[in-house]
View 1: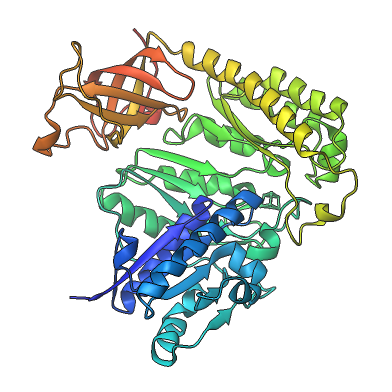
View 2: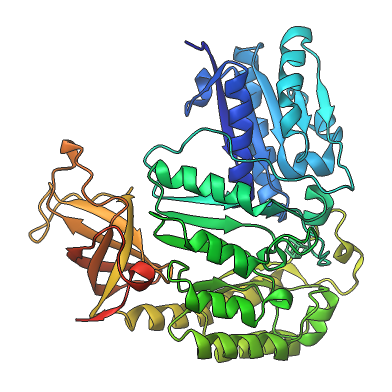
Length: 473
Ligand code: SF4
């Protein structure tokens, strides 16, 4: 039995979650066992994100709190990985004196050498070598997720786009795709272990395979669609400049590909899109949305926005609001612009004040809330097929309609909307009667961020088209 424990704090995107799995596999190989209790760990890894200033602050604040643990346990090894580590390198050792290891985004494979070195020599180590040559993403370690219904599969990593506000190409390197055969093997393995839904992950999935001359992304979707036992396929992120008719057709023809697309637009102003180096115009984006809605009616569309990009005028911001009025997104992620080291926009003049950025963000979010509520409200009365992910973290203490023994379950529609429902089953019994099943659920209430429903029928594993026709109740 291992008697050494590691704890990982993962900050940031799904790519980091995936990397943390890789890190965990290396540590298990070194005889460590994962723990969720920070205080018992012999090794703590913080997998950091630098996409926004807030994420970086979060990492340093957590690292600061580890000082006391190190005083109590001087043998504790503390490592920092991910994008902040890649970006800051040795500077982190100076800033946080109780850190033992700084390892970059391409150094995960070398952890098997770095950790024993620290264990034996009690030295401080920095490994942030980043090659210009693309580094192929590793296969998922053979640690099958226990009871997971839905999981992520990396199909590519890195980015060649160089948006002027973004550090990803600088900290994760150039874009490179995994071979489709390796991706298929991984997904088949996941399905065998009970996974029903995969989200194919990359910084720009639309350019999958192009550089290497592998199959195209729509072709990859068709191959994954053929995997028996897999119920649903999602993917993220799509770049509008590479989003074309063949992918729109793939969304329509592959029955397991969900009715949802996340297509970050960032701004509705051509002037700002140009300054961001996004390589598409407002008109092109809207044309693609129109084609998408035409070919796939009912598809949910979500997006990302940055407000207060350097030089953004009120007129530019109004163009963004205007684009939102046209598209009526199902949901969005919006952020205020913040300078990131190494990103070209740091040098841009006409920075927007914090007060203006905050006000614009609030205006944008208020507008979106109307659209989200409207879209959710439209589903009330319909029966939606939900892929149930498990019991909800938030359990309910009982009421006249729902006794204390009722269990709250949670899942998603094909359009990626969260639906919660109750079922009269004793939570103590441990009986997992819904996880991984498609449950036809009548939507009874719409909230700002979720829906509430009543289960009508549990579908067989194979389900109908997309496993989830919408039934008029
Ligand atoms: S497409 Fe742009 S925003 Fe996305 S990762 Fe690449 S550089 Fe960053």
